Length: 248
Image (cartoon, rainbow, N blue to C red; front, side, top):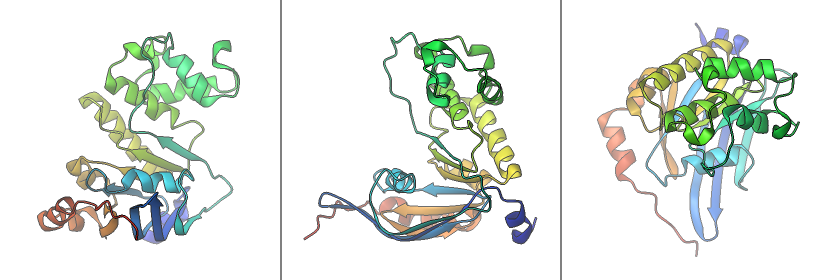
C-alpha cells in the first residue's frame, strides 16, 4: 500500500512533536523532542528506563505540562483516544470481577449496578477479542499477570479508538497473550488506527512496527525498524543514560 493510500484509509491522527521540553522541579526529563507519527501507522518508542518514554506519553495525554508544540491532525470527526497502561495496581483482595472492572472503566453507571445494556455488547466484543470472555466472572486478583494485561487491553478498545497509546503492553503477557496482542495490532493497522507503542521487546518492534523512535531524553534516531535497530544505534541508545540535569 502506498503512503497516499494509507493516508486516505487512516482513521487515526498524524501526531507531531515539535521541540517538546519537559522539566519536573529542577530535573529536565525531555529536551527538544522532534518527530512525527504518521496517521494510521504503528509507531514504536524504545529507549532505556528513565529515558522519558512514559513522560512523553503523559504529555500527549495532557497529564504533564510541557513546552513546545504537540499537534494532532485528525482526519475526521471521530477523535477517540484509547490508553493501555503498563500495569494495573490495585488491592487484590477486593471482590472485583473482570465484569466489575470493565463496568467501572467503560460506563458511567456505577459498577455495583452491573453492566449497562448500552455498553455490554461492546464489552462482550472486547473481552472476546483478547480471549477473556470466559473469565469475566473471575476476580481480578485471581488472574495471572498476563490475564490482567489482557483485560487492560480490552478496556482500551472501548469506545473504539482512532488513536491508541500503549505503554509496554507486552510486559506481562504469556505466549498466548502475545499472539492475541499481535492479532490486535494487525486489526488496528487494517482499521487505520494510529498506534503509539512503548516497548522494550526489540524483536517484536522489528517485526511489528512501521517506524521506531529511539528516546533517551532526546530523540537519538527515528527510522523504519530495519534501519533503526542496528547494533550501533542500539549501543548508542542504551549506553547513553539520561542525565538528571539540574537547571541552573
